[in-house]
Image (cartoon, rainbow, N blue to C red; front, side):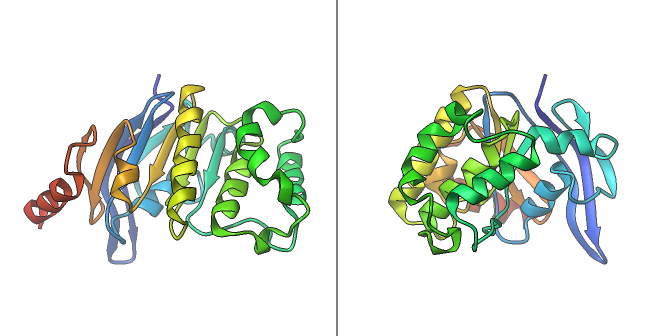
Length: 231
Protein backbone atom coordinates (compact mmCIF):
# COMPACT_ATOMS: atom_id res chain seq x y z
CA UNK A 1 0.00 0.00 0.00
CA UNK A 2 1.23 3.48 -0.83
CA UNK A 3 1.90 5.71 2.15
CA UNK A 4 0.91 8.86 0.22
CA UNK A 5 -1.66 9.13 -2.56
CA UNK A 6 -3.14 12.17 -4.26
CA UNK A 7 -5.78 12.02 -6.99
CA UNK A 8 -6.58 14.99 -9.25
CA UNK A 9 -6.08 17.55 -6.47
CA UNK A 10 -7.20 21.08 -7.30
CA UNK A 11 -6.71 24.22 -5.22
CA UNK A 12 -7.28 27.88 -6.08
CA UNK A 13 -6.64 31.12 -4.26
CA UNK A 14 -9.14 33.51 -5.79
CA UNK A 15 -8.45 33.53 -9.52
CA UNK A 16 -5.06 31.82 -9.14
CA UNK A 17 -5.03 28.05 -9.73
CA UNK A 18 -2.28 26.75 -7.45
CA UNK A 19 -2.95 23.06 -8.25
CA UNK A 20 -4.64 21.86 -11.41
CA UNK A 21 -5.43 18.17 -11.07
CA UNK A 22 -2.27 16.88 -9.37
CA UNK A 23 -1.88 13.14 -8.81
CA UNK A 24 1.03 11.26 -7.25
CA UNK A 25 1.91 8.31 -5.01
CA UNK A 26 4.78 7.49 -2.64
CA UNK A 27 5.65 4.00 -1.44
CA UNK A 28 7.13 3.11 1.97
CA UNK A 29 10.92 3.29 1.77
CA UNK A 30 10.84 5.67 -1.21
CA UNK A 31 12.05 9.25 -1.64
CA UNK A 32 9.88 11.13 -4.14
CA UNK A 33 11.19 14.57 -5.08
CA UNK A 34 9.08 17.53 -6.21
CA UNK A 35 11.01 19.77 -8.59
CA UNK A 36 9.73 23.05 -9.94
CA UNK A 37 10.07 26.84 -9.92
CA UNK A 38 8.53 29.13 -7.31
CA UNK A 39 4.78 29.18 -7.82
CA UNK A 40 4.63 25.63 -9.21
CA UNK A 41 2.31 24.56 -6.38
CA UNK A 42 4.69 22.47 -4.32
CA UNK A 43 4.02 24.11 -0.94
CA UNK A 44 0.26 24.10 -1.52
CA UNK A 45 0.42 20.36 -2.16
CA UNK A 46 2.45 19.84 1.02
CA UNK A 47 -0.08 21.83 3.05
CA UNK A 48 -2.96 19.74 1.73
CA UNK A 49 -1.21 16.42 2.36
CA UNK A 50 -0.27 17.46 5.91
CA UNK A 51 -3.93 18.48 6.57
CA UNK A 52 -3.21 22.20 7.01
CA UNK A 53 -5.54 23.29 4.21
CA UNK A 54 -8.37 21.61 2.31
CA UNK A 55 -8.36 20.77 -1.41
CA UNK A 56 -11.09 22.29 -3.56
CA UNK A 57 -11.44 19.08 -5.55
CA UNK A 58 -9.91 15.63 -5.65
CA UNK A 59 -8.88 13.29 -2.85
CA UNK A 60 -5.73 12.34 -0.97
CA UNK A 61 -4.68 9.86 1.66
CA UNK A 62 -1.67 9.49 3.96
CA UNK A 63 -1.00 6.17 5.71
CA UNK A 64 -4.29 5.00 4.18
CA UNK A 65 -6.21 7.78 5.92
CA UNK A 66 -8.26 10.50 4.22
CA UNK A 67 -6.69 13.95 4.57
CA UNK A 68 -10.07 15.56 5.21
CA UNK A 69 -11.95 13.03 7.34
CA UNK A 70 -8.98 11.63 9.27
CA UNK A 71 -6.84 14.73 9.71
CA UNK A 72 -6.37 14.29 13.46
CA UNK A 73 -4.99 10.77 13.11
CA UNK A 74 -2.77 11.75 10.17
CA UNK A 75 -1.12 14.49 12.24
CA UNK A 76 0.07 11.89 14.76
CA UNK A 77 1.62 9.73 12.06
CA UNK A 78 3.57 12.17 9.91
CA UNK A 79 6.59 14.41 10.32
CA UNK A 80 6.67 17.78 8.56
CA UNK A 81 9.45 20.29 7.93
CA UNK A 82 8.06 23.45 6.31
CA UNK A 83 10.21 25.64 4.13
CA UNK A 84 10.81 28.21 6.86
CA UNK A 85 12.52 27.41 10.16
CA UNK A 86 9.51 26.91 12.44
CA UNK A 87 10.98 25.92 15.81
CA UNK A 88 11.17 28.14 18.87
CA UNK A 89 14.31 30.30 18.57
CA UNK A 90 14.33 31.29 22.26
CA UNK A 91 14.24 27.67 23.45
CA UNK A 92 17.39 25.57 23.57
CA UNK A 93 17.99 22.58 21.32
CA UNK A 94 17.02 20.20 24.13
CA UNK A 95 13.96 22.25 25.09
CA UNK A 96 12.67 22.22 21.51
CA UNK A 97 13.07 18.45 21.30
CA UNK A 98 11.40 17.90 24.67
CA UNK A 99 8.53 20.21 23.68
CA UNK A 100 7.75 18.37 20.44
CA UNK A 101 8.17 14.98 22.08
CA UNK A 102 5.71 16.01 24.80
CA UNK A 103 3.12 17.05 22.20
CA UNK A 104 3.11 13.48 20.91
CA UNK A 105 3.22 11.90 24.36
CA UNK A 106 6.74 10.57 24.07
CA UNK A 107 10.31 11.45 25.08
CA UNK A 108 13.66 11.87 23.38
CA UNK A 109 14.97 8.90 25.37
CA UNK A 110 12.12 6.63 24.22
CA UNK A 111 12.79 7.28 20.52
CA UNK A 112 16.51 7.96 20.72
CA UNK A 113 17.47 5.13 18.34
CA UNK A 114 15.66 6.79 15.43
CA UNK A 115 17.15 10.26 15.86
CA UNK A 116 20.53 9.26 17.32
CA UNK A 117 22.57 9.63 14.08
CA UNK A 118 21.27 13.20 13.72
CA UNK A 119 21.05 14.16 17.38
CA UNK A 120 24.67 13.18 18.07
CA UNK A 121 25.74 15.99 15.72
CA UNK A 122 23.76 18.65 17.58
CA UNK A 123 24.04 17.25 21.11
CA UNK A 124 27.19 19.31 21.90
CA UNK A 125 24.96 22.39 21.41
CA UNK A 126 21.92 21.09 23.29
CA UNK A 127 21.91 24.05 25.70
CA UNK A 128 22.26 26.63 22.91
CA UNK A 129 19.18 28.57 21.82
CA UNK A 130 17.84 27.30 18.51
CA UNK A 131 17.91 30.79 17.03
CA UNK A 132 21.69 30.92 17.56
CA UNK A 133 22.45 27.75 15.58
CA UNK A 134 23.98 27.74 12.11
CA UNK A 135 21.71 27.05 9.15
CA UNK A 136 22.80 23.42 8.90
CA UNK A 137 22.36 22.79 12.61
CA UNK A 138 18.90 24.38 12.54
CA UNK A 139 17.82 21.96 9.83
CA UNK A 140 19.22 18.97 11.72
CA UNK A 141 17.31 20.08 14.80
CA UNK A 142 14.13 20.54 12.76
CA UNK A 143 14.55 17.04 11.31
CA UNK A 144 15.00 15.60 14.81
CA UNK A 145 11.81 17.32 15.94
CA UNK A 146 9.93 15.99 12.90
CA UNK A 147 11.10 12.44 13.69
CA UNK A 148 10.75 12.47 17.48
CA UNK A 149 7.42 10.59 17.46
CA UNK A 150 8.50 7.91 14.93
CA UNK A 151 6.35 9.03 11.98
CA UNK A 152 5.46 6.71 9.12
CA UNK A 153 5.79 9.44 6.50
CA UNK A 154 8.07 12.47 6.28
CA UNK A 155 7.25 15.70 4.41
CA UNK A 156 10.16 18.05 3.69
CA UNK A 157 9.49 21.34 1.89
CA UNK A 158 12.85 22.61 0.55
CA UNK A 159 14.63 21.58 3.77
CA UNK A 160 18.14 22.65 2.72
CA UNK A 161 17.50 26.03 1.08
CA UNK A 162 20.19 28.47 2.18
CA UNK A 163 22.27 25.75 3.87
CA UNK A 164 25.96 25.28 3.04
CA UNK A 165 27.01 22.52 0.65
CA UNK A 166 28.57 20.24 3.27
CA UNK A 167 25.47 20.42 5.47
CA UNK A 168 23.28 19.66 2.45
CA UNK A 169 25.30 16.52 1.69
CA UNK A 170 25.10 15.41 5.33
CA UNK A 171 21.35 16.06 5.40
CA UNK A 172 20.75 13.87 2.36
CA UNK A 173 22.89 11.10 3.78
CA UNK A 174 20.52 11.14 6.75
CA UNK A 175 17.50 10.94 4.43
CA UNK A 176 19.00 7.94 2.64
CA UNK A 177 19.42 6.16 5.98
CA UNK A 178 15.82 6.99 6.96
CA UNK A 179 14.58 5.59 3.66
CA UNK A 180 16.33 2.31 4.45
CA UNK A 181 14.25 2.09 7.63
CA UNK A 182 11.07 2.04 5.51
CA UNK A 183 10.05 5.68 5.93
CA UNK A 184 8.19 7.19 2.98
CA UNK A 185 9.58 10.64 2.14
CA UNK A 186 8.14 13.43 -0.02
CA UNK A 187 10.66 16.22 -0.47
CA UNK A 188 10.84 19.37 -2.58
CA UNK A 189 14.19 20.84 -3.54
CA UNK A 190 15.53 23.56 -5.84
CA UNK A 191 18.86 21.74 -6.16
CA UNK A 192 19.32 19.34 -9.07
CA UNK A 193 22.10 17.41 -7.32
CA UNK A 194 19.64 16.65 -4.50
CA UNK A 195 16.90 15.69 -6.93
CA UNK A 196 19.26 13.17 -8.48
CA UNK A 197 19.38 11.35 -5.13
CA UNK A 198 15.62 10.70 -5.13
CA UNK A 199 14.17 7.38 -6.26
CA UNK A 200 11.68 9.22 -8.48
CA UNK A 201 10.93 12.86 -9.22
CA UNK A 202 7.78 14.80 -10.10
CA UNK A 203 8.54 17.74 -12.38
CA UNK A 204 6.01 20.49 -11.62
CA UNK A 205 5.11 23.76 -13.30
CA UNK A 206 2.14 26.10 -12.87
CA UNK A 207 0.12 23.71 -10.73
CA UNK A 208 0.55 20.61 -12.85
CA UNK A 209 2.91 17.62 -12.86
CA UNK A 210 4.65 17.51 -16.22
CA UNK A 211 6.21 14.11 -15.66
CA UNK A 212 7.02 11.54 -12.96
CA UNK A 213 10.11 9.44 -13.57
CA UNK A 214 13.44 8.29 -12.13
CA UNK A 215 15.97 11.15 -12.22
CA UNK A 216 17.38 11.27 -15.77
CA UNK A 217 20.90 12.21 -16.66
CA UNK A 218 21.30 15.94 -17.35
CA UNK A 219 18.24 16.58 -15.20
CA UNK A 220 18.40 20.37 -15.45
CA UNK A 221 18.42 20.33 -19.25
CA UNK A 222 15.65 17.73 -19.29
CA UNK A 223 13.46 19.86 -17.02
CA UNK A 224 14.04 23.02 -19.05
CA UNK A 225 13.01 21.24 -22.23
CA UNK A 226 9.84 19.96 -20.56
CA UNK A 227 8.95 23.47 -19.39
CA UNK A 228 9.46 24.84 -22.88
CA UNK A 229 7.06 22.23 -24.28
CA UNK A 230 4.58 23.00 -21.49
CA UNK A 231 4.79 26.73 -22.22
